[in-house]
Image 1: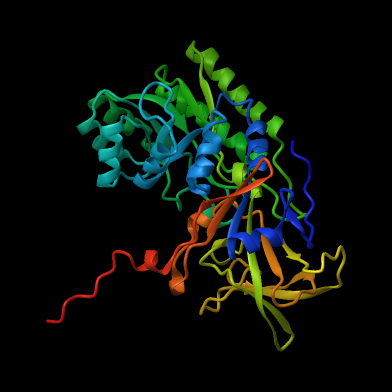
Image 2: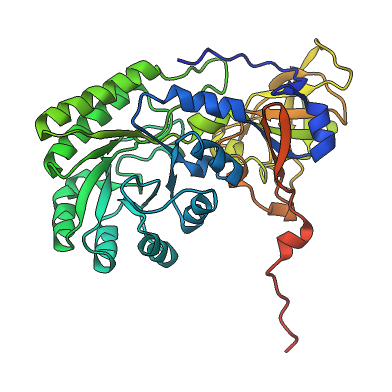
Length: 424
């Protein structure tokens, strides 16, 4: 299990490179990723037969290429993610399923891509079975089953139970088997994912539910997926999941099924956040410090257009100040940290429901940098052009070298494709 992390509030470097140097070279706001941390997390999951990266967590081509070179395959949830995987060097089709499409619908573009490239499909709705079967009968498919319960650090990240749109409702399994039979589709895999922040108690329930589902489907199943949701600690009160025990529960389930089915099963895990969250840092500059009654505000040049998790889920991110003077210690103050957007919700220190709270941080001055940490998952990928702000630059640090992997968006990029109609 990974060592329990520390959360310093003064920071001088990222992966051995000065934060000030990074900011001067690439500007702010900029996402910086530490490749070594991603590779470390990949190694944590080697006991599983297949590590399938949920690229929706961070889908930059350089990140996809990095994990691909480690033998990590990929999950795609849209036509764009299929195209990203192909652009990053993943191969479609064949027995190894380097790309799997997992979703609750086919839009028309996705269905065409799946047919064209012979991409394996993890069906999350009964209608998907018919839509695929009508155009590509005889293929193998996986079913994503909603077992009737879920778990997540927020209701918005809970992907199981009757309030979730995700997966095939467990009671509809027989209907799905009949649909597959009508089209000659072979159900070769069963997938369950109930949400982020999985604990071992909920995991045991998922294992039991998946075992029953596999036995109901029968001997055509050759692959089971543990889904994702592996948590990482964002603050000192959180810990990692017990990975050896996590694997033991899934491996025991796999072995029981192998004995009953009479053949080997491949055990997949589908991490997103776990692989990339800790690697990512959003480097910003403090542009204003203002007093509003009892509240001191540090206002940054980064906003929820860059990192949306706090406004969406009340998510907590560690923060650190980069002292211009290289100080190792500073007095602290309780502050509210916000961004530049014309939106009252543009606050990084808030709880779910929009309640503004304070964070104890070192006293800082205008022009110093503030780093939002553990921002590698659901950070850049959720960015927007709200207030006509450009998308941030992205930088990857690997073997002591910082390399630009995405240019900062220009204004011309933002308005590309827009048209003013001719006067009538």
